[in-house]
Image 1 (cartoon, rainbow, N blue to C red):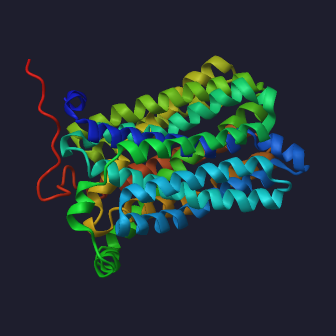
Image 2 (spheres, one colour):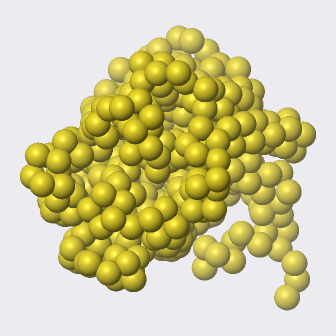
Image 3 (cartoon, rainbow, N blue to C red):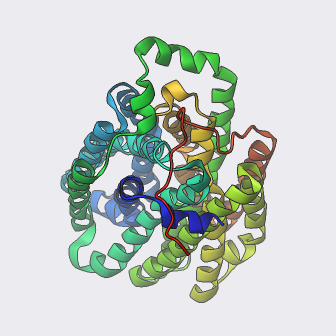
Length: 413
């Protein structure tokens, strides 16, 4: 069983997993704070909600730039220094958001934040996947991807507990805390053994993506559908609860926290499941089952049933996502594994970046019916995710080094 494999990981491998999980968690935390306070920023700057959601679009749209820049750095000088620099950048820019004096400056700061946010996933995922044994990739993949809903969970808890006391600017001041993670990475995380073995040069890196161009296009299309799947079900949900259902901040934060628990559970479950049945089958099952959760998630009227629907939806959405760190790293050309997974993922983010703004705009045009728009988008995109994943390639447990990474010697029974 893949869960039992985790017992045998050594300290070096666990440190890489913990650092990269926390890096993605805290990156997502800084991102999702904005999602929770869209109406409040709009009130401060006396604009419509849709205008503020453009800042979310800018963050998502700039993530490919960060994935490319930090990915190139990771492939040339190592995963570890690229990860440390990235964490410092997104922490500083998240904190700076607290002091923006206008909507235009908000756009500028969140665009830069998007560059930093875009770098973390690809660098962290490659560092971890290249450090652990192939037999543990599925469950660790789910654990790493659980960092994203873990960040959403932290943001929802912070919103429920602190927003009424510190306001939206105070929420962003909390964004400085992730910088402390750099101390742990510096002290406890070693460089990727696969990178140390190969250390690709510029010529090898430059030739890798053209040689695998069709694979690159496929992965970008796959990740576009995946990002529509996640952002179409997550980003607008707090606004849906606050505007359409008139719930207070505590209720909104609580439902979002329950959804995040579902997301974390789903990522772990389907990541482990993928080690048994394959990456493609696990994704297809999760995506198609999510369609059954739509009525409870989008059309319920009571807070309790909406919370159940949110839990189920995110269990399945992030269940499909839980397979992605392993799947993309296994498909990636070795010379650009620091760049290829993150850059293709974030290009998909770019093409999906306008989903919250579009959903908000159409919902306002049709009398504030957010639920119907969310249901429509989710139904269509779930089929797209299942189609791309089901008919695409996979390279489960491909070796990253001449000798596969090994775990510690298991204890005697």
